[in-house]
Image (cartoon, rainbow, N blue to C red; front, side):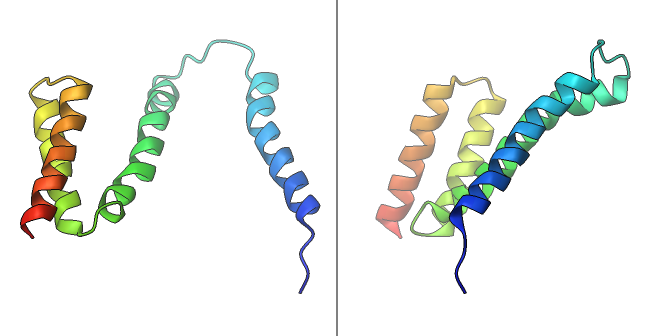
Length: 101
């Protein structure tokens, strides 16, 4: 079975452009619906979380070190640590857990 890569590229381009162009042409006024505004506000965060959380478990040698780094990051960010401190602590957690186990 031979696939036409140019057809796939064309479809991908059309879908990508449609996602960007259709909202600009259909929505011309400010959105006043509270539910829709709230939904659109959280979409980037949910998308980032959906892409990041599975990668946390697969990026390390053992899922245990990824899970402990996730909990470390959540705890430090909950208590107001900066992004640099959270990422450094998560990296250190993974390093130490994989060094021990």
